[in-house]
Structure formats: C-alpha cells, structure tokens
Image (cartoon, rainbow, N blue to C red):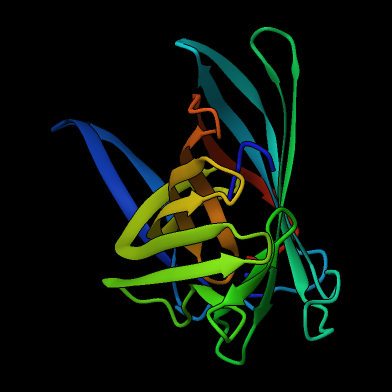
Length: 250
C-alpha cells in the first residue's frame, strides 16, 4: 500500500532504581514502568484513539526536507463501504498532519478496513486506496495475531481489487520499554516488512516497527517507506510517532 499517497486494565509496576552519592548519603531516582499484564489484543471500540507527536523527513531527487506535527490513530466501527459480500467492516485511520521545513503543509489519511474475531485477531479486509482483498479467498489477512507472543513470524500475500499485490512479513521480536508523553510502558516490538507492486506500475517498500501495549494499541510507530513510481522515480518517507494522549483507559 502506498503510504505516501494514500486497550480498563490493571498494570503491574516495575521500578528501575539508580542511586548516586557518597557513603554519607545519596539520592535515588525511580522511574515507574507499566508492565504488560495481558497479551490479548484489545477489542477496539468506536472512537478509540491515540494521539502522537510526529517527526520525520521526505527525500526526493537527492533533496531531503523535514517535517513535524501530529498523528492520530482512530478506530471507527462498522463504518466502511460494503465489501464484495455486502458486509460493512470497521475502519482504522492513521492521519498525519504537520508542516514541512519549507513551509508547505503535510496532510495524509490512510484508512484500513478491518474486523476483529473472538480472540482479538486484527484481520484486514482492504483499504481505501486499493479496495477489498480478493485473494486469498477468505477475503482477509491477519495483520496482528492475538494473543501476542514472541518470537513469532508469519507472512501475508494478497491481491486487492485494483490489482495491487502485497507481500508482508510480520515479526514479533520481543518486549521492550518505551517512554511516551503518557508515561513509560513495556511493549511488544513488532516489525512489518512489506512490498506492494502496483497494478498501475511502480512499487512501495516499507519497514514499520509498532511498539504495542495489547490493551491500548501502538504507543510508538517508526516507519520507513521507499516508493518507486511507474516512471522509475524513487522517493522516501521516514517518520516516528510517539504517543502523547489517548482516550483508552490504562
């Protein structure tokens, strides 16, 4: 997919203590980390959202410009256009709003059509750009398996209505600590490596790392996308999103 164009919980508490000083006394600094207490992915409700601070850059024709702004992860249930079976799915929107260092505006809105099953598996049925998945015959691929455990790796290969073909490998690498504007959290580090070959010509290759708290969602996102258009022109977008606020209880 061309990103250039187009979860109440109880937390265990771990303390990281560092001390300094002489034999006459010293000081102790404590940082509270909210530990993962469930590996079952939250079933998202209508209006669930995470807001992020954003930094990044675009490179084209050998020139790089930076950008800053905000991102928003928003879940809207049962709101997609009807799919090929006349079923309405939910929508996961990742919107980026900012300004480039040259003063021009950045405004992108990537919409994924999804549904979650009884286990919480996050199944993708299509997106606003390339429309519905027509192969495999199930009509979906599993973007994130629940319960989450590491290590775990799987590959999704699928074709969408407009002919775009995607091969994506998802790896649950392990757990890592991430500090955000909402606090410090233990997360699952999940890497996706994806290549989309567009029916209209060109490719979109990206590496994305999601730092996921299962009962909240992705509290940090790092993405690096390299796009080659039908004429062979290469461009690149890199960005980092770090959560600042959310309406999801934690």
